[in-house]
Amino acid sequence: MADLNQSELQNLRHLIGAHEMAYQKLNTYASQAVDPQIKQLFTKSAQDALNTKQKLMGFLN
Figure (cartoon, rainbow, N blue to C red):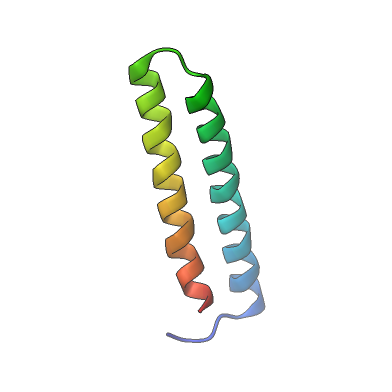
């Protein structure tokens, strides 16, 4: 993989931060949800955000 320039690195950090924030918020929403279907939706969305964050972090190696 080619080295990232400063702009790409900054954009990557922003994306990672945004996905971490989405993960945290969606987990909070899931914990507060009463309806099982809504809880499942938030839980899956949180996991998807975490998976994407981990993939993005792979570009930092």
